[in-house]
Image 1 (cartoon, rainbow, N blue to C red):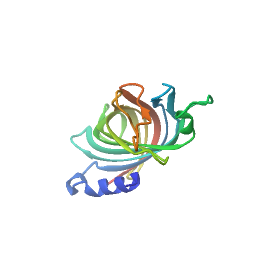
Image 2 (image 1 turned 180 degrees about the horizontal axis):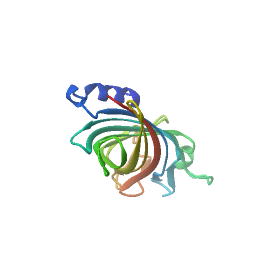
Image 3 (image 1 turned 120 degrees about the horizontal axis):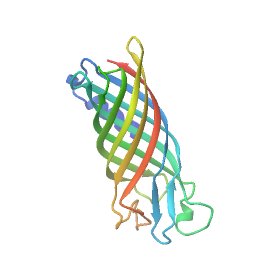
Image 4 (image 1 turned 90 degrees about the vertical axis):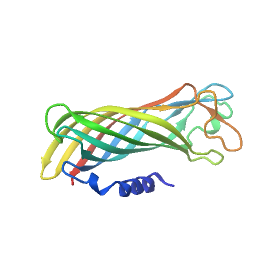
Length: 205
């Protein structure tokens, strides 16, 4: 199932009670970097190239300063293994890969009511890794994000959000990832980490 299809289904599944006062839908555009795997044969790093990202969130109020948030963030990128040839990592160089986060968490505004000023954000959920190369399967792993943001009301029901988030995905360093007919890649450590900066346009419901 494509990430945007999953996002649409998840948003439609939210209870009607969530659409209440101080609820909002936000669409983000940003830039994400970081994240590396390791070739099982040579130990060479296989990086996920930094690239543009897109995200969406649905927030609804818990109290005067806090919101519950459902957050999905998607990055379409490529594997990057460097110039030196090595098998099998060299065969992945330049091949596409998508990294998508599905998180449930919240926001907490520091200086007053929801919708204005600085806030801290975070969530827990899962990461979907989707290689675009034949012979490689998609993988789900547990993950989390934490970040800082600032929201500027623009008038009416619109607001601008600026955020920086850090993502941590827990993986099995002893096993293989993307195995389809044989494990080709294993994780170089216990975690896969990324960070991004993004701007969002928020609509109050």
